[in-house]
Length: 244
Length: 239
Image (cartoon, rainbow over all chains, first blue to last red; front, side, top):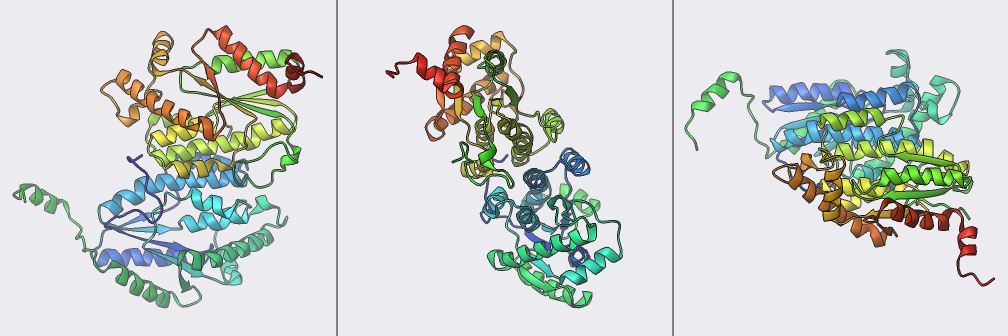
C-alpha cells in the first residue's frame, strides 16, 4: 500500500479514466471497444480493465459462486477485493504514466447490485472509497425489455447470481432475471445525479452512440498530450539520446 | 431489546433478537500468547458446561485457503489484502459466529476486526475508511487486549518461534533485517492497539506474567461476562 491511501476524488494523475456502466445487454462493451480502437488510432496509449483480476481472488469468487456460498455481504466484499486489485494493478499505474484507462463496469455496478441485494447504500459507497474517480462515467440507459430481449435471445444461459436467483425473486430464471435487472436499473437511475453519470441513450444506433461518446471524450482529453506509441526501435534510439 | 448490536449497518437478513450467546475477543500483537490462551479457555469453558466456538483469522471456508496462499506469494497490494481479509472475516461472521450465537454458544475469537484494522492502518490504509468497512461487524461482549511492551515481546518471540516474515512486517521495508523490522512493525501495531483501548472499550490484560497468572486474569474477566450470576455471588454482593 502506498504511504497513505488516497480517497475518491483526491487522486491527481496525468492520465484519464473513462468507464462504461449499464445493465447486461445495454451494448456498453461494444461501445467501449469502438472507443478503444479510435483512441489508439488517434495516437493515445489506452489500456483496458475488466472485472477479472489476480487468479487468487478470481478463484475465490468463482468457487463461491459455483457452490452458492456467497451471502450479499461476502458477494460485495469479494468483488471489492477484486476491484481493489484492478485499481492497484491495472488502473493507478497507467494513470500515473499519463495513459488513458478504459474500464468496462466500475464501482457503480457494485453499488447497484449490492444495494439490490440488501447491502446498505452508505456502507457500500464507503467500501469503495479507495476508487479513482473517473474522468467521465458513461451510463447506457436501456429499457428493460430491450436488454432482456438481447440477453435472452442470444448468448449462453443466464447464470445463477446474474439472474439474482439468490434473492428468491422467482423460481423461474428468466423471470428472476427480469425483476433483478429492473431493480438494478432503478439503482442506476438514482446514481445519475448523485455521481454525475453521463447518460447515453442505448436505443440509438451504434454509430450515433459512438459519435456522442467520442465528442465527450475528445473534450475531456484536451490538455492531455498524445503519447505516441513507441516501438522498440524508438526505445533503442532513446537510450542513445543525450540526457536532458 | 436485542443483546447484540452492530458497529454500523449490519449485513442484510440478520435478526439481532435471535442472538443469544456471548462473544469474547482476545486481541493483541503477535507473540503475546493469544492462541495458547484460547485453547486453555475453551477447555475451561467447556468444563463449566458452555458450548464454545473458537475461531481465528484466515479460517473461512470461502477465502481462507486462498488468503493464506496470497500471503505466501505476497503479490497483492495493500488495499486488496485488507479487503481479502475482510471477506474472510465476513464469511466467518455470517457462517460461523452468528449461527453459533444463535445457538447460544460462547464465541471465543482469536483476534477480531481490531487486528485487521491495525494491520491495515500500519500499511497505509485510511483509518476512517477501514473503520467504516468493518462497521458491519457485531460488537463483542468483551475485548481482552493482551498487552506486552515491546521489550518483553522481543524476548518472548526470540525464545519461541523467531521472527516470521509477516509478523516482522517485512513487506513494509521498515528495517535492515528482520529484527529491526520486527521491532518497528510491532511498535507501530502496539501504538494502534493502544489508541483503540478507549474508543472500543478494551480491557487491558497484562500478558507479562506466567501462563497461570494470565490465565487466571482472563478467566476472572470472562466469568463476569459468561456467568454474571456466579461472579456476582462470589463478589461483595450484600443481598
